[in-house]
Amino acid sequence: MTILKKVTQTPTRIGSTLYDWDELVQEDRVHRLIYTDPAIFAAEMTHIFGGTWVYLAHESEIPNVNDFITRRMGLRPLIIVRDQEGKVRALYNRCTHRGTTLCRWDKGNTRSFQCPYHGWNFLNTGKLRGVPWPDGYGCDFKDPKYNIAQVPRVESYRGFIFGTLNLDAPPLLDWLGPIAKPIDEWLDRNPGGQVVVCEANRLKFKGNWKLAYDNSGDGYHVVYSHRSLLETENRLAEEGNKGMAFYRSSPDTAPMYMQYMGNGHHFKDKRPNLNKRPGGLWAIESPHPGMEHCESAFKERYGERAPSLLDLAGSEPVNINVFPNLSLLGNHIQVFEPVSVEETNAIWYGTRIVDANGDIGDALDDINALRMRTQEGFPNFGEVDDVANFEQIQRGLQCIEDEWVYMHRGLGIPGRIRTLDDGTIMAPATDEAFMREYIKEWKRLMKARPNLAIQREP
Ligand code: FES
Ligand SMILES: [Fe+2]
Image (cartoon, rainbow, N blue to C red; front, side, top):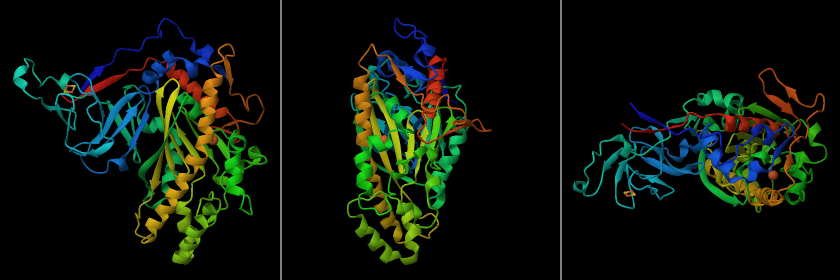
């Protein structure tokens, strides 16, 4: 038996202003306020980062009982823990005494958390275990209100842990819908269909979190925003086909495409551009310092097996974007973490593979070392271009009289955008169709009355 407590409903009115969401989000454009208004940001923390499923962590980060990792759901600090019985929980990182964060560590392994302020002690199930000098209290500490609040719904899909406060949200798998298929494919190319999440490359930018999500499937900016990286990637490559070279010349007629998958999720698939042969993926990998040497040593060591082993280190050419805060691209897991209306953390977790079938043997460490190098590339040399744009958009949007942001590329051109039988929407790689679709989902959630609750152990 768990105890659920309804959270006060978020009012329609935000502050003293009544927002007209249909005015703010139109078919071809959105109002600057959705990126700049602190009251809208505050409402997003309940309607989006609370009202829908939010990515929290990966199970490989807490493989053993009593493992924990600290994360966020919107602005709420959380402790994601595998409790003593193996159950994954998302505890509010907030002491029930006077409200301080309970756990100040990034990760660790513990059966209980002792509050650093006055020493209240909680089991990792969230239950209060004891308080110092209890004689000084006249209350009954068995009252569940003293147990740590937790996210009432926590579910995993193939290792990805999501949580929501919304009791009316659909089951996780229904909510993922068609985006589950590219996630499956992203995992299934690895031995045992799994990855282990590693340490992260952490960036932050002075801009709204949606600027990053708007950009996550944007094929229109690539050759302009990332020109120096593209040139660096291809300076010494005879075929000129490395890294993001797909986007040169006429990206809309290339076999790659974008697909909107519903519920705010979308997918950019660049795999159709690939030459499907062992080593085909590795052949287009961006160059990195010292790469030729590593590659030739690898080929010498592993002979005929080298091309297919190298493909396991190569970056998968997809962007899989799970609304509102998760992106799988290359071999990374990227997480968008809102900090304020104009500040966001963009965190890039690396992934490594495991020898699940026992056929990689000695090569495993070499593959994972190469994989790590490929994962250093884009966050250092590409994401910096993107976050510079996000910061400059946030600056530009301070021109308060110039109100609209356009996202209408592809709109109104007959035959350019197709709706498939499963309801997903396909468009050429540079279309902004995914932006128009996800922002509709954002609007739906902002208008909705989410049925939010927290839970405590009885
Ligand atoms: S705030 Fe945690 S014990 Fe006082
Ligand atoms: Fe970019």
